[in-house]
Amino acid sequence: MTGPPLIEVEDLRIDLDVGPSRVAAVEGVSFRIDRGETFGLVGESGSGKSITALALIGLLRQPLSIGAGAIRFEGREIQGLPAARQRALRGNRIAMIFQEPMTALNPVSPVGRQIAEMFVLHKGKNWREANQLAVEALASVRVPAPERRVNDYPHQLSGGMRQRVMIAIALACGPDLLIADEPTTALDVTVQAEIIELMRNLCAERGTAILMISHDLGLVANVCRRVAVMYAGRIVEQRGSADIFRACAHPYTQGLVDSLPRLGSRAVLGRTRLREIAGVVPAIADFPNGCRFNPRCARATEICRTTAPETTLLGADGLVRCHHHA
Amino acid sequence: MKLGASLIIGGALFALAIFVGLFAPWLAHTDPVMDANLMNAEEPPSWIWWFGTDAQGRDIYSRVVHGARISLTVGIVSQLVNSVIGVTLGLTAGYWGGWWDDFVNGLTNLMLAIPSLIFALAIMAVLGPGLTSLLIALGLTNWSFTCRIARASTLSLKSQGYVQAARVLGYGDMRIMITQLLPNMLGPIIVIGTLGMGGAVLAEAALSFLGLGIRPPYPSWGSMLSEARDQITTAPWLSIFPGLAIFLTVLGLNLLGDGLRDILDPQSRSRRT
Ligand SMILES: Nc1ncnc2c1ncn2[C@@H]1O[C@H](COP(=O)(O)OP(=O)(O)OP(=O)(O)O)[C@@H](O)[C@H]1O
Ligand code: SF4
Ligand SMILES: [Mg+2]
Image (tube, each protein chain N blue to C red):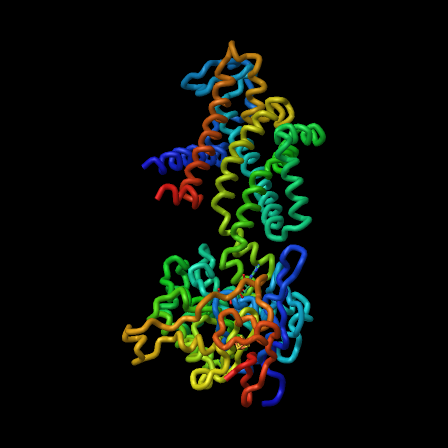
């Protein structure tokens, strides 16, 4: 492929100010997403997925800040851009939807108006045109009777409908990248599948790249072509989705794969419990020396406790960060 | 239901006052200033002179009716000015924080420390009596509660998902304040505004009573009370009717404010359910 990738993150470090000192909440994170590509970021709670996404759209606020590295959108560094140019990217070229469809919509404003606002803000439309476009946007996310629904307030809609509205808002201006941060965790399983399918189809039709963030490896691998696994602020493995299940290299990824229920396995039949990874992600201030996974790792040896592993390339576009990778 | 009562009574009293103010020229029997006739001086209330007449023979009913215009104009306009100032300062202070927040906080504390009537009195002393000075004096001195509420609401609303989402979608600061924050704090602001309007009607009466507001012969309820002061025993109707007008209007606004609080304030709403 020619030209720069859509978005490129290079050796990103995110600092967290705690009183007088600062610690790195995210460190050495690099990945790239091409136009129209689907990329997943997986990891347990607190591993730094959301703050990485916020860094991507230039919205880290105190006590968090970008400590090192570069984020390039179409080859241009985002941090260097003036505030107004950054704002013009947000919602317009890079959009984002969140976990909580209940709270992400303004309760006192009709949903149609909230969609229309995007066209007024980023595309310079007048309100009449914008309201018309809002009806079309609502129809495109398969909300029935959109010309009536535009007048509804968020509390009149179900969770699934609200998330559809969020998708309509996010995709209104035809962004190049959609960041979906746990877009369905708050929803019923059946609704989850519908929403994911909708998001995927709409983005595929329009050539919108997706950065999907979740703690659910199965979901992400299903939606995305490539997956990065994050642990304690670092990417520990990055592979094509198919490879992750076939031959994951990092002990942590192995743990995630083992904790997934598989059709026909004994776990589903209830004879054995799903295997879980013992322990929790350490807090930022207590990151252990060496490999941050070492207290929970079965393969850990002396070197793991003293020296942080470097990344090793695996095949064409895979990488792993482990001294004893498979 | 009890909730409805104060809203309905307060709303009715306020609506009546507005109606009287709007249609004063048609409701009044005589011109409130010009139609003096010493032949009818100090008539007690009767079928002809509903509220009686004063020492110059002017119809008190007509003067009270016209007084509604002035009292309500002062109440509504000055409170609107207060609300705009209070919301603007409180919203921006809560949103931006930093030195601006410190400055606004300091100013608010200063305003709260000095009774607003004293402040208004000082401004009136400088500007001289008259309607415009009244509007300025009362409009600039009673925004501190609104400001406090607006700032506190902003601080709690700022962390709401939809405010964060707006930022992510590329909204600028102004657009966030106007579309996301302001509409969500309007309930308490309206309640404070309604109560403040009652306060402004009273303050106008007090300043006019002291001779610093509306000056005779123009009829404001306060200036009428001021004129009637010496005849309170000989011609009590001169004080009773303007006094009653003030009482009912302020009572109406306070009831309305309470009633609105019940339906608009989410805290009292959740308490009720
Ligand atoms: N505003 C903040 N102030 C202080 N620490 C923060 C802040 N935001 C995030 N953190 C810390 O940064 C780390 C990473 O947070 P992040 O929200 O990115 O996790 P996550 O991977 O998205 O987790 P989850 O799955 O729970 O959403 C966490 O340890 C969190 O406590
Ligand atoms: S580096 Fe060592 S501790 Fe870390 S994951 Fe690999 S084996 Fe486990
Ligand atoms: Mg998160």
